[in-house]
Length: 511
Image (cartoon, rainbow, N blue to C red; front, side, top):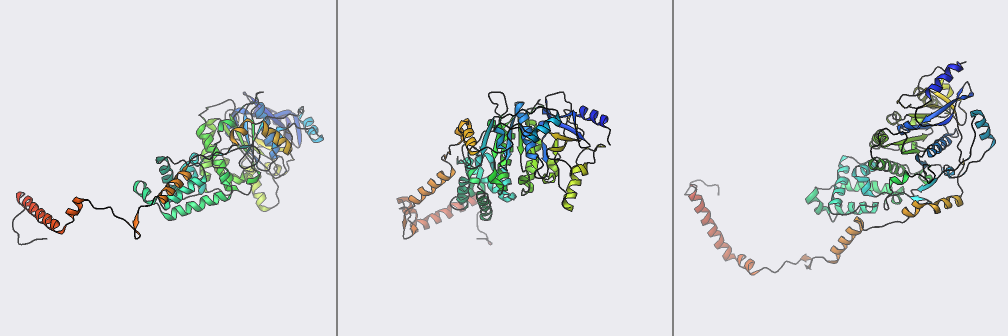
């Protein structure tokens, strides 16, 4: 049996912080909860990102919900990507049951049911604030990454964006981009070639197929106006709580490309829009991505590199990103290495592959003499987890088994009536609900082509009619005049050559 006093001293020292922190649970040793050994989470390092992992039914989503509640209490806004549809209950008061009572007795804490200010967001036609972005905001580089284009095709996309900028053709939605793509392939090919270079039909055809593939996953609902302003994610309620933004994307589980498209655009927009924040006492925004494997499973190498780059850089903006997934190996090693907080719920060892994953997972945690990490990962109960994080100096804390606090809000979904009530009270719904179809590239090019069709050049017998020649052109076209001009021209040339010493008779001639 491990030495309890040494363990308690280690954990109390490792999880006591100078700045503001929140209590997420109590340490456990040999299966017992230690009421005098709280485990705290420092807000200062919440921009160092994190991972919440574990098998289905082990309590990952409730951990995500609980941490979001504490952040809201501390006036930190959050964005929750709700894939399964079970996070909306955070906007309703929690209820006490026997399991919750028992847990809080073990933690030596008082359970206080609460509800939190929430905003419901949507990428589709579900009730809530509609999130959209224009094609122009994506830009040629990001759009090319999403479409998984090669270097040549990326060059064509960059050329199209440049052409649209120079000719004031706004690219708002995908139909604008498709229209320009068709135009530069057909009617506008010569126009583009003069200024920007030749455009390969093969390249434009491939790009068009990729865009249609994106459309088939429902991307038309996402691209367009009015563009969502990321500052609206960082609002504070009237009572000082951080707003909890719940993006319900239950209809995107079978559309990983659209989900990746949204995620990458949002991260890029947050990075581009937010100023450098330096070393803050607490983050400005924390994003929780549930079922994170949907981002990585079908992501290209270029897309993974883009995500890795943003993850590395965005923490300087005061923004933290947490990935929630069943298997920690779902997250690429390059991204996993950037995550400061790790909350590992139980994993199940049903197959040899499962045992290998568990072994790898155990090796990613700090070494400890108090636990057999590889064995303990399979023995954790519901709502229990192995935890390690970065302290305020950036040093990993000791690995600890934790009985986690339960959420204080409802651990279930909202009813349709409750959802409609929240939506009806939202100021943002009114701001973003109206679909705007501004004059853009599609309408402008359509009008240009229609004008050309309505006013064709006059023809005679299927051939363009030539203008009537002028009197001067008639005289110059006369054969006698042409002969006289040639004779006069030869005389002038010979005179010039003679004055230069190149004239005179020659026995050999090249003419």
